[in-house]
Length: 385
Length: 207
Image (tube, each protein chain N blue to C red):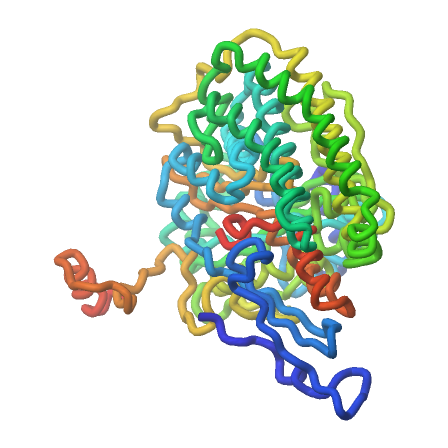
């Protein structure tokens, strides 16, 4: 498909000036198991060191945006599940938020709480499995990933009993959620949430001070604060570089101003910090969940005045964004008053976080490229759309 | 961020800069600022580096296709805001349509935003050049490549303007409103009736 796109200059002799060495071009991908999907990197190597790296993707491209433009507003809701297929509920949330901004819909209180509960559960399972995958990339085959998947499965069970699907939840609607909680769900969720810190303790005992983990990740793939801001990196990646920017605190969308939680920040911006930020964020999410489950009010779970059929927002545009587990997920919509959006744009966090992959990898060993890529947390369904 | 206040400040800082506030009638109230391409770099640098603005974070960059046929609907929504004035202007202008690049700016340092910038090309066929803002914000890198790929806007000054989602040999721009999908994908196995009908339509000069 895509032809090699390294500039001709990359095949010259190595920058060290050694005459008997030559740069080696390696095409990593598109299906290396650790590359998190159908993703390719054209790497130029000087010995084991990376001197050039170009990410190549688009293998999963199906023009999501074009399809959404010929579909009704509500019709695109299930399709947003397929963007970042690990976090369908937060995708729904970002889209619903953008449409609510566009049409001026007010969400009832209980629905906001349901969104926070399901959204934070999504963050828990995303971060848990990301850490598991990261260990897998490092060669810790199986055990940490299976520990993470054990916990993730409990959360997916909750999703299944609430929405009918483990991963493609399709749970949000404009002005609220699709359905109310089934009987006994909240107690079950409370049990899962209360037991979650035990898993985190176990994980940390197993990993955080592990000598191999520290040797492989500390000082690897450093991303400076300045570059992170300029390159629009968001989410845990940005905060690992020490920038205090969490949309739950900045925008306070939904009801996030009611909860008491902290924003963990990293110091060095290396892979170890990115690993640690995820563990700390899970602890904060557990705290948000406990507060939300405690305070969940009675009331309608969706706004009864919002039209389901023949939904036509007035002409105009809106950009809505949320703090998805991978970063800032935004939807930009332009309405021309018809039932279909005139323009529908997804701002995918993992695509934009990939911008600085080359900067982080230059000068690193080829074996570390896989870990650096793993620490970005990409999902190709979202990158390629 | 109030555009009414920002506009005179920008016009004072960058001589010769023409700005227009594009009103947004939707409840979101996110109005945007139409800027002229020749001053875009100066304007973006000013927005990024001025201490009380400090728009250090370019969140979302996207393209919008406005063919001439889509424009009347747009004028209607404008009329509600500024009466008959814009109506007269549009009658004089020749309807060619244009491509638009939209930038959503936020400030991570001062935690405000968004300021929405728009740039328009002269038409949709050949004069589709806009200045790239990637030298100002790296985050525009992949997103401008995507606009080039899917809409066909050429960003001057972009360090690496290649296709990003479609393959390199692909020639069209699929996000344009008048894009016709090819019917001769090599993997389409048999000529069913609807495929044949589409092919005839395609080769009778409608492509």
